[in-house]
Image 1 (spheres, rainbow, N blue to C red):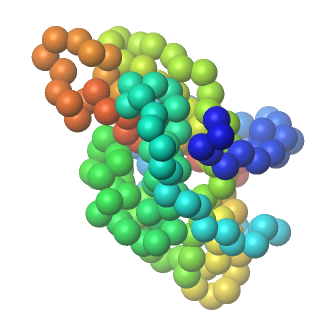
Image 2 (image 1 turned 30 degrees about the vertical axis):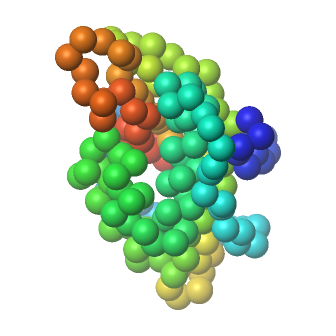
Length: 173
């Protein structure tokens, strides 16, 4: 995955206590998110927009969606970033939280293994949202970005067959 910025997110995620494990069952971004949590954060570094040919049906294309999303939110290009979501309402909810920050960045981990369910393929990617609040306080919030695409089944649309962000599962307290 030479197209993606990889980090040691997995080590950080493995260090979570049982109380900090992922909450499941949410199908949308949680509207009440504490993004001003004080923690030590690495210096900001802009994500480059991805380039290079990737099969749009491949799992690597799902990772490219997350990379694009990170680059777009860093640049506050909200209409383009929100277009990468399957749900405009979920995209708008997260945008509302992120625009309250002075700056936001996204560190990306390695793609998980794809899983199939009811005519769709899902894959998750660990990320860390980080940056500064408008009051100068740093924030850091780990999450799993869940991506989905519909298999090439009769009746599915082009939009459904493209990888999109299905939801973000926040990790930790």
